[in-house]
Amino acid sequence: MTRALLNIVIVGYLIVLVSNHYALADSAETSSADLAKLQSTAIEFCKLQRLNAPLPPRPFTTDQCSVWLDGDWQTCCIEHDFAYWCGGSTKQRAHADNQLKRCVKAKGHPVMGNIMRLGVRLGGHSIWPLPWRWGYGWAWPDDGS
Image (tube, rainbow, N blue to C red):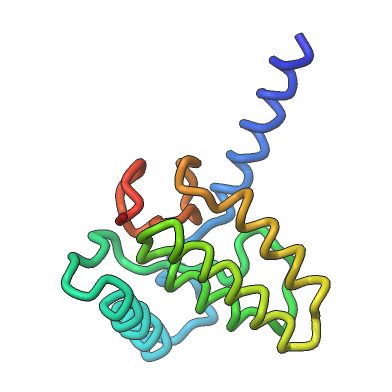
């Protein structure tokens, strides 16, 4: 009984989280020039990561810091989204998560950087069929590796 209740709570929470994720084009605060620049930057990042491998078939999206507090670290989250959209190896994921931590720390928030790294290590794994998972530019369960 307790396990069933826990599963219901987890599924409900995930539904709420998924409903909060939006595509770049849905952000009223982002200009079309900014959207194009982010799309272009994500593609260039991914080309460097993947070398001659194909790019993700889905367009790049970001919600900045998925289900997380706003702060002066939003650019860190967008850069992290470039890597998560692209996907790749587990080593590349670990590097992206460590880079997020370093970026947030460089903004003057070392504790927050550690917490955020732990959060993406747990909640961003490609096993979860979530829109912010590792390799979200690919149809789940593919992660681009």
